[in-house]
Length: 105
Image (cartoon, rainbow, N blue to C red):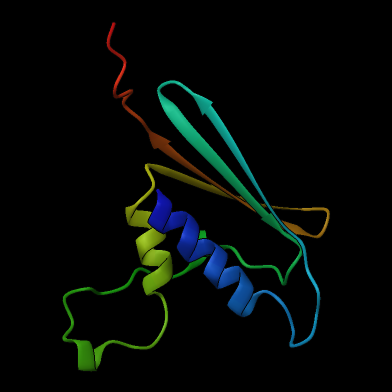
């Protein structure tokens, strides 16, 4: 999940805003067993990562087109994804099932 969050935040910072444009990114976490939900909201350009084409990971590195691997990593490192564009804001929700650890009596 950490990798998926990092990739999405990196994509927002790199691509969501015009040069010199200020923006706001909000990250909300919710833990409701058995799932961790992370909502990442930004006011950048509209972008739905759910519509990005799948990356062909079988291609040799020198044959792969640039871009798309970040979205691929997001998809592979979250159990569920959803996207919405509301009131001029992109909202990506990532959900991952979690297993409690270290809960011994």
